[in-house]
Amino acid sequence: TLQLLPRSLTLLPDATYQIQWSGGPRLHSEIKFKILNLTVANVSDVGLVRANFVGSTILYGAIEGYDTETKEKIIYGEDSIQVTVKLL
Image (cartoon, rainbow, N blue to C red; front, top):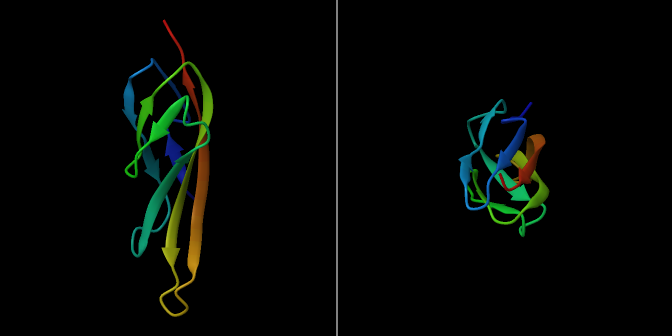
């Protein structure tokens, strides 16, 4: 089971934070990140979140791999967290 850490994230505009994760297979797999509202924040391929504008969004992570025989994509685990951007 994949777990993204921290379980929720609050940032100031222009701040960055590296998402951590635990769980899921390590061999023949990779983690993929996606953020629902790119106006509020964005996330890089390695899980670096950058806050853009005040608001809230959801960040999704999934451990993906491929069946070595069929070459079909396999989702080993998924998780999501709340990302909030606000002013002091």
